[in-house]
Amino acid sequence: MSGSSERFQAVFLEVFESLPRQGPGNRECAARALDLCSELPPAPAILDLGCGAGGQTLLLAELLPSSSIVAIDTHAPGIERLRATVAQRGLTSRIAALVGDMARPDPPAASFDLVWSEGALYSIGLRPALQVCHDMLRPGGYLAFTDAVWRTDRPTPEVRAMFEQDYPGMGQVTDDVAAIRDAGFALVGHFTLPDAAWWDDFYAPMEARIAQLRHQYAGDAETLAALDQLADEPAMHRRHGGEYAYEFFVARRPGPPEPR
Image 1 (cartoon, rainbow, N blue to C red):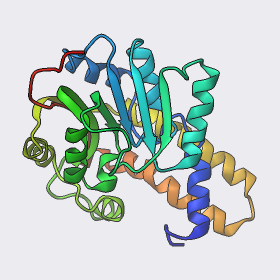
Image 2 (image 1 turned 90 degrees about the horizontal axis):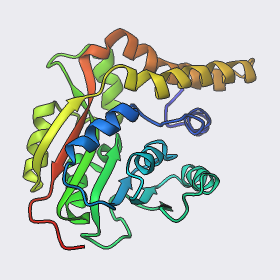
Image 3 (image 1 turned 45 degrees about the vertical axis):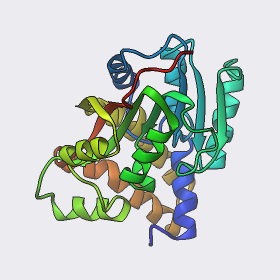
């Protein structure tokens, strides 16, 4: 079955839309990245680019209780889910969830103190995305993002094939650092996400959801084949997770912070 088939895409969404997160990450990593943003203003304006269903958006609201957040994603059902959660938690005055294009965000340039993006910038190309982030930040503002990176020069063929489908331009940490600096940022710091950040809120719930859907669609060969394809990802991480990683980068747009 092709990963681009209509049925595969429907099954993909049925799995991923129910997950706490749509990619690796956790509260501890978010807090560690925020610690590197040591000169944020008391009530920062934040842009969450490629927010998915907003797992990290809600963490940011919790970790920075005086912040205001604009969360943007192209996938309308994820935004609707985030809006419902925001309303349920009484956060509508602080979080605006919008359907939009990461490459062309609607908010005006230089509007934010912090641009945040977990596992999403690659979707429009890292270097173009970094320029978008630079433009959206006020002078002195911070960019915090995660990106998949190679940890070896010679990945196993099946691992390389998996990433070639989704992220053919994936590089190593040094490549991302060079791209950050070329985009006009000063690198503040970076760290590798621990294995718990892959499993606790992402792969473990994914495998549980796949198991549930296997039972629900027993006898549906096409759907079961799609679920098999999706199950390959966490299985691959068990076998070869040492060959790649997610890295959290924190950078800053140079210049004195503007008066608020």
